[in-house]
Image (cartoon, rainbow, N blue to C red; front, side, top):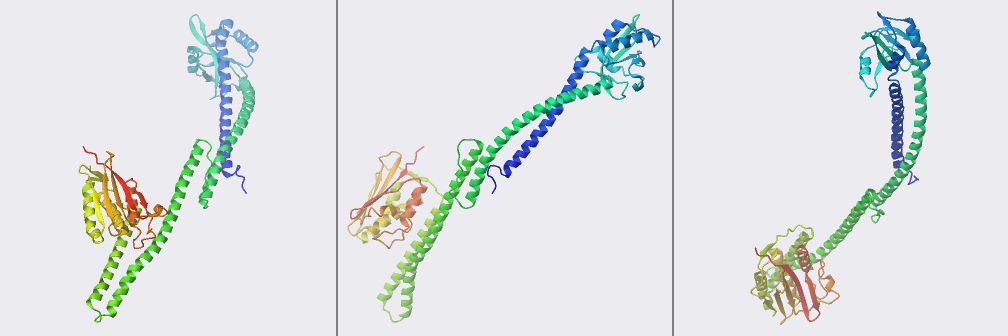
Length: 489
């Protein structure tokens, strides 16, 4: 089993980190050595900037007709060897030709040197490094000191001093390079080790958190939907864990809803099969009876069978319509279209539709509506459906001489309260929490489709308002809900 603290991710990131440190260390050593070398060269030239001028002032070399007096040359050689045995001294004519020199004779290869860097040196106060020709190594450049030789007011030549001979440069570069390299390597190794330790600890800490996140994701993917990532702070990685937890909560919620929908689908199929079977069987049975008794049945009996068939068809139609209506509401296929309308007129119209049916059964429908009832804002077609379902439900549970009261209250200036109260059979307290569930029909009435109040509840949810119910067996039931008053411009 892989160690959860030292996994592939840890080693990959660590390898990249170490390689980066090594590259950084190499670049740092290179820059350090190069900077130290350049610094030594710069210091050497600045310290010896006036060496050639002082040499001319002290020794006063005598140039006559492009020749150097041997006595003057010997003085220069002796003085230079005493002052600095590492330098090379060249005496130049005004055109830069080498007249004589103090240097190993066999290695001097140039006959003349460029005067451009010499002029730059003479005009430069010493602020920058200037390189000139190296007579012993054509193509290479060296630091130098130079001075004009003036006789009788005329320029007779130059003293050109290369400040580090070839042997000296090789030795000094080796010493400087070795010294700086040793210091740099020791410093870089120390920094490298400290950085590596701190970096690896940081990487371990980061990958540890990533491991927890990856573990949580894998567990969730494997089906452990309750798996969550422990979040201890508000860091970026913990934010990832928090985002995953929120996503997992939403996915788990959706999974539960899908399972619920699946259970609902099974229940729906079962209920539809049961509820549709009854009217279909009734229609089929009485239709077969009419066929078998064709020519041997009187008009009264035929009318009775046809009425049963018609009522069964009506019941089947209502049930199918309510089923499709509820399905659309549950799947959010119904778009709310709010508008301002007179709730008083709508209640009066719906009540009048049901009065004929209710009067046949000896049930009175009464409306209590104030003349100054304000308009409300809602979906008028859906509110019409709510009123029909509630009144239809009240009629079903009422007996002869019962009554249904529909009242509009305007005590709240922002809302209109609609109440539909009946004096019917009532609902027991144990049944009240279930009446808005799909296919719940109640113990005392099984002829209903069980969808009417579920449709009412869903429509109220769409309007973001609550449908309330109070009931007492043998006394009656009251449904109430509120709608917002339409604001006048």
